[in-house]
Length: 466
Ligand SMILES: [Zn+2]
Image (cartoon, rainbow, N blue to C red):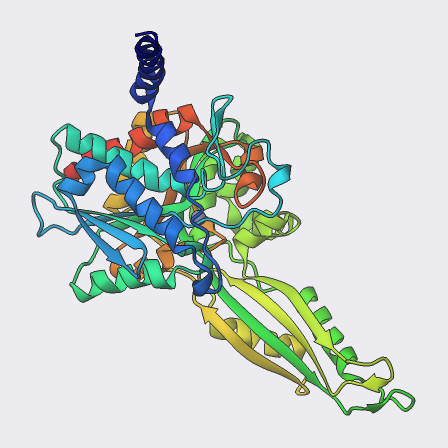
């Protein structure tokens, strides 16, 4: 009897303990659980931890039963997921929301306040790798879909939810294959919505308070190899110019002659949208760029982040030449990485490099290149929908279109979307940017539950009106 009682007592303790835990498990707990799957992407696809990815899929299935019952799920490229939320009027152009669940590695776990893969909730935050980039997007979209289904909602336009497994290594097997899948079926999207920018606080000089930055384009990517040739031989009888000297001169010229700044296009729309929110003098400066363009260009060029917004950037990232101290190398090589601004092309960059270096003994090899994305239309129904939805939820934040300088999966969707937007509806403070791919990545519970999920729910509902 005593033993029975003890068992009974334990059962009570267990139930009393577990029931509130279940009752309280909300979106933040589910995001925390998502963090515990170590879904890292590696340059070498063979290094992928299939167990972690399969575990993540199974977690989604058991966590979002309505989504898995009500939407059609396709597995693409082994691990990426595409859910189809069939619209009431399937002949209308559909909408795609996308996010990725692969994450970048953690360099030094001991530097973290909470272990990066434990999904700790503390001090009002969910901590861990992927909380901002980009499991908040994946889980937030699924939470929204589950909630919409619970409310009996069916969208007017078909809504695709695409979750990539390899965004951090370029997204070819995931988003690339998903875009091809859509294209084969003749799908042309009204717009796609992906990560990229967010609601940022204190990030734009001259504007106090939050600003909703929506990425309307992303830069292209190009790596060139410069190979300087010269006569080899013994270092006791060197020529006037060695391969290393020629290469150094080529690098110096490249750094001294950046690609020209562009104050039109995306940058122009950004400045136009910022201007009304500034005080008088900067407002006049931004609004009269025919007069102040040169001054603005040199001011922006002083700042690394601003300089990257207004031009194709040049970064010399690797250099090699020579194998022995007394032997002249016949070749020296530098690797140069460019991020191409919309308006410039891969060919423009190669032409610029050739003209600036002006040395036939320096060969220019094109390694790999991707053109800049098309620029989404800020007058389009998709952009207006984002603006009006944000106006409901965060009326204090002006909406500003901008250029994303890194890469996202959206580059793959450009071919099947009229417009591609890059924006996740969470609030980032000035210190949060370095947490992405860095130490102590975290998202506040109120941000995730109160803003991000509500935004996707509101967006889906509002899309019925366009
Ligand atoms: Zn990301």
